[in-house]
Image (cartoon, rainbow, N blue to C red; front, side, top):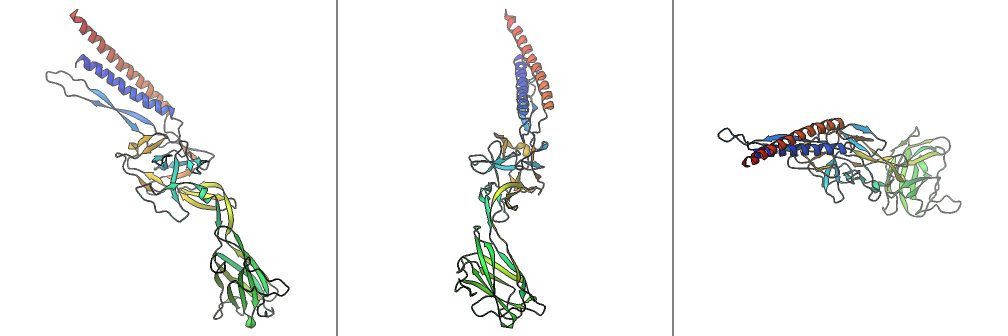
Length: 418
């Protein structure tokens, strides 16, 4: 081996340890970064075949950086429900402000005050699927069909009425109601799809033969006529039902035209909501009227909080105590996570060596679960890194001695001509 080769070997060794020190420094400075994965420098020798005559050809050291992406960090509990940690395999899918997709384990998300999106400390937006139109059908190898997790679209929610009912007692000995009049009126408050309340009036009239007629009107469109005569509204009837009771006073389908329920539209002309009004809870017994009514549907309620399920479902919690499954957060996987390309913001980009992305949901096909109120800590062990730093410094010093010794020998050779 020539003296120049000795110098090159020393320089190669120092460069290798410089790379190692760089990874150690990066690890230490990110030891408190959520979801950070440590890097390490791995060395391999580069040799040149010896030449004839027994002369040794010096080689060098090649450095490769390995990312320990598959090595999980400790999960620490937090007080924020929007802090998310993956307990097992998988990555969150996020997008940067330009819309470029990335993968990350950093789940320190919070609602951005400007966009309403859930973003992490690096400004990356959490992506997922909307559940407002039913269960999603994700593209298994793409993220292009994902949308930002944003509860602004469900900041208020109204549930339209679809079912209503009357229950209780009608008088067995009640007088027959004259034509065009009613014996009793009951009102039900319902809601349209915008959350606007509307009142349905149910007019009960007793017929000859022991049957009853229920006539339903929209109270706003057809107010009860003024005066002491209990007259039915002149127009705008939404529907009628004939109620027949058996010998025990229970409602029965006793013949043509009788029914236990009626399906009607809440607006004349069919421009309102479709509601099924159920009469099966009514009985005809001795005594006075005693009727109760109820209807489903809710007025608009504001979102007061967010909850995350272990399967990635994002629930919007409303001020009325209800909650709605609004979004679902998927988890992405690749065949070789350690070969993902790191990018700024503690995110990763798919590479040829990592394999293509596969999209699924938590706790399915080997993917981990999502834990709300927790964060995955860095997998850096500072004591291990400090030990590596000392080792690297010692090896660097030894390589510098090789260089200085070779340089001194070269000086000796150069001085032979004097």
